[in-house]
Length: 245
Image: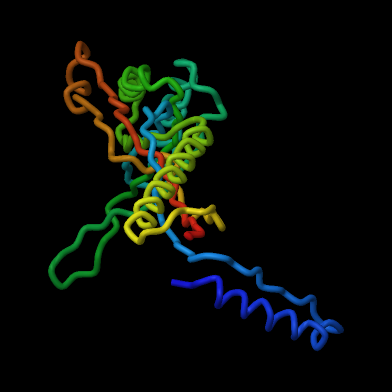
């Protein structure tokens, strides 16, 4: 715990040293603090419902030759992308996330591996700005030829307002904690000396949401996939220094 007396002494020393370093450096003069410094770390939190879902959808194909595997994959992937655009997904919400071509091997005892064919994969990252429609669109993707789906990852389209609310909550929590410590020590909070932001989470890393009945929807046309966004925590952590008297 630092007191104003120590910092005032530091300020006098800095002022005395000023003429020595004035020709080469700009002196940094300590500001005297009249009181006891208390540092509090607090995390503010608000809860929001995600309104954007990002899912990776793609096609995996196999063939005897690399050219055939890649060509078949490209044709089927073109159908998947056309299906996405037909549902109203904007071009800006589509981006290729992975393209790969790998040989497939057969292994035998005491024998070198033998290439038996090739596997090609191509996946696209799809951003759904209307989560309620995402399940039906996934079903349409499977019908169009997609056989690989990962996700969804949920996020907020406009996290700044939620982060600001979390920061305000963090300040309130820090003030309440400082008041508690001051009362326990027989003192009072005079003012805030400094605020430093130590970290934040804009809601882009929530608990994995639920993708319901995905396996069933691939087999039965009368049951659709359901995506449940749930809620996510938006947090901000602050280090706040108070002056107590």
